Length: 420
Image (tube, rainbow, N blue to C red; front, side):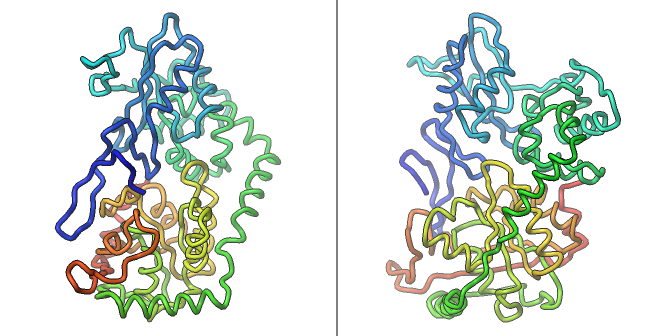
């Protein structure tokens, strides 16, 4: 939903492009964050007198960094533990920097634009102890690779070095490639290579974690009921009747093959409209989709979630279980899996990259990835509306709704998958 204070521009086609906020609210990976809330939590820690939080671009992605002033030196590990008790993980800064003086504007407010750039030094990982066994050495190497650091010590904290939930997922995938079972939840609980190594050595606990996660997602997608099929059939007929519905490229998909469909994100009905575009070649029973778990909180969205074949993704925490379930389904039972590539959740129409979601599933299963462009759904069903619009009353014409896929050169496409 758009809120008071959001800034944007309106395109000629009526779509609104989100351009940030007038105040301290930002959107990071699709999640709305009030920087002042994080700053207030930091100021609640003993010894901190002033705090500021800024979003910076680091290693191709956006990250939060916390700045503070204090009379005495602050133990930043204790600060992080304190924030973990008071804030969700996505609101905790990736790193902290102590300032002598907090930059202020002429009106006395924090000048975030004047905050210094946060630089992660390449030798940060060399400050702690060396690995003591093969497992610790492997975990240190993987951690350094994921965080793009020269080296990481056995006692270095993954999150203090700049890790986040997306990088934790990449950490898990790379560890799995080396035969190490590392649940994402274990990375949160044991963020150093040494403590994580001890957790891995306790194989029973790891297996219990994986079993709990597997049970949680095994019931998804929820089995569709009879009226779900009736609704989907009516939805297709209504879409083709009410809108100028145009499908280009998807008719070339082989109905006997499997595909990972990667559309941009314009509305909460994107998945349904993509499935409608594929209905002549595939059955709805062949389809499943990774959808944000918050859609389960609303009765209407929960219904759409079930009809779409949804698998809930916890965007605020550990979403590795959802990806594993999706990979298992597309490999063994389903023919189509829909997942929005990273970078599309802001509804700016960009396709995004395939680094930690679609690429991981494609690499693990060998299933081809198909980029899809949705045009017009944001105008038909803007985030401010409870229900989609059916007719363009202003121009007295039908809305255009296009589902386009032009990239069927899979060898070339795979080169764009940013994962090694």
